[in-house]
Image 1 (tube, helix red, strand yellow):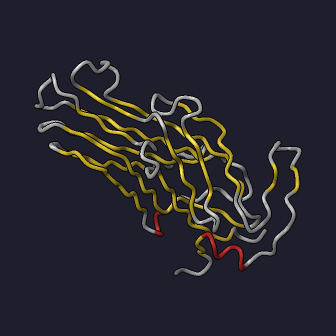
Image 2 (cartoon, rainbow, N blue to C red):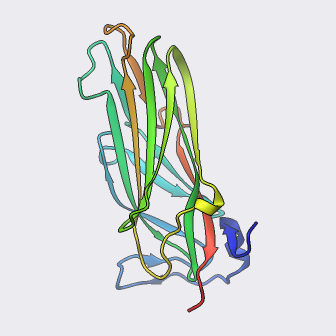
Image 3 (cartoon, rainbow, N blue to C red):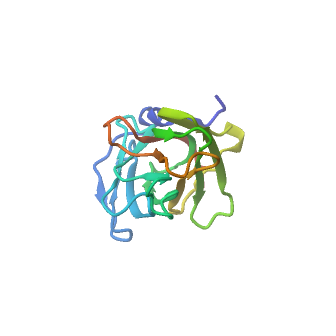
Length: 216
């Protein structure tokens, strides 16, 4: 591992715990230096109506999980013509220990798909920090016939990680999309794809990488 590059839980060994303090300028509670705090600023999209997406941070601070309860795209049968594509944009305020910055090193997506023969589906995600021109896009395609749980993983080489700027607060944006195409399948038969939590075991996990900021 390159010098100065740390994975989440290692931060606890490098800093001492402190009592959280309120930061009047931001309106948020500052985290103790060995933890991260993620606040959801906005959640927008046809795949995540209000109250249907939740964010939780792992105990070791190496990852956070997003669960959905209404993220479904479908075509065929009596499906609404606009239902073939669903999307969700998460705008997150991430408070990190002083002197450190972070990047998203890996994202794991899970769901269920039922695709008729001839149909296909695409799961797409993009990642960027507010005000940054650097946007990372990832796509995963699934072809029918398919009727099972699905999983897709986005990974980024260490050398290509895009880190949050040091010393400034920049919200982190994650845009996800699922799209189902009927292709050559029968128009009378339904094909669908979900990214949700209907079976209690479906979620999206984002793994975080840490780096020390340059000394001022």
